[in-house]
Length: 376
Image (cartoon, rainbow, N blue to C red; front, side, top):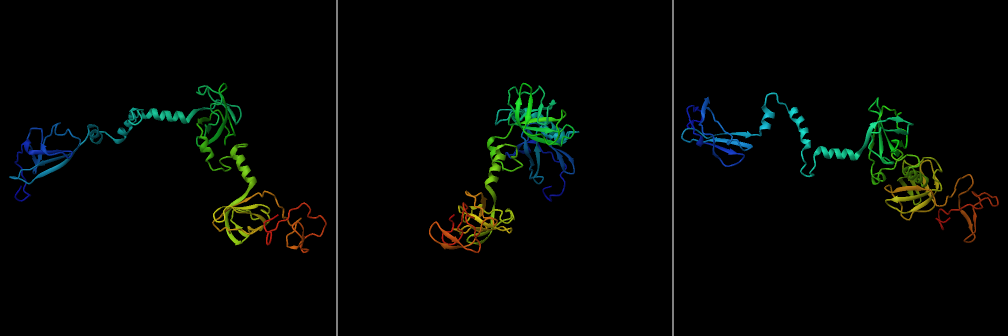
C-alpha cells in the first residue's frame, strides 16, 4: 500500500499497458501480451508474457508503477536460449551429457582457418606420426620388419626419424632410438642402437618425425644426449676433452701469478703442469699463462705474472699447451739462474740442477719470474 508500505494490496487489476518491460538494458515499454495481472497470494500477482515479451536474450526488468494505489514494484529476470534452459532445468538433464555433445562440434568450420578442428588435428598427427604398428618380424635387436600396411614406399623414407618402442606386456616400458636405415621393399627398419628392453613381435613401434637440424645442434652437448658411436656430437665432445682439460671459476687469487681453482678441478698434485690457464670471461679475459706447478689443493703457479689479475668472478679454461713443457721433478729442475753469460748462454744454480753433461739437452727452459719472465 502507498500509505504505510506494509499493507497488502490484494484487489488490484493492472492493465497490460501499465506493466512495463526493459529488455537487456533497453528502454521501458508496455508488455505485448494483453492480459492484466491476477492476484495470487499475499499481495503477489501473476503476470503472463508472450514470445514477443521474451524475444531478447539477456536481462529482463519488469516494472509496475501506480502512484494512486501502491509503491513502485520491479523485479529482474533473465531470458536464456532454449538449449540453455533445457540444460539447466529439464528433467534428467546433466552437464556431462551436454558436454559430451560438444564432440559433434569438431566438424564445425573454424572461422580463422577455413578448416574443421578434427581435420586440422588429423593433419597435425599425420605430420608427426609417420607410422604406428606392431613389429612383424625381429631380425635382431637393431633390425626388424614392420607390416606391409605401412605407407612409406621409398627407401630411406624413415632415415633420421625416431623409433618409439612400447613393450607389449608392459606399456610403461618405452625406449626411443634413431632410425639409420629403411628398406621399403622389405619394410626393414634399422636403428642405431638396441632398445633398452628386448623387443619382440608383440611390441608396438611408432615412428615420429625427427627434430630439425637446428634444434639438434642447439641441444646441450652431454654424454646423455649425444653419445652414439661415431656421431658428430660424441666426436665434438672427444675433441673438446682432448684440448680442454678443465673449466670453471677462479676460487681465489693468491698473487700476481698464483691462483686457486674451484671444485671442478682435479685435486692431484702436478696434474695440470704444462697446461695453459686461460681466462675465458670476466676480469682479465683473454690472458693465458703456462702452469709450472700445481698442488693437490688446486693451487696453480704460472710461468709469469698476469697483466691484469683475474678475480673470483673470472671464468677459466685449462687447455692443452701449444708446446708441452714437461716440468716433472723426475727429470728436470727449477731454481734460479746463477750466471747470465749472454742472450743464449746461462749457468744454472748448483743447488737444484743436475751436474751431468748434456743432461738437459733438447729440453725447454722456461723463465717464470724476474727479467725475461714468460720466455721459453
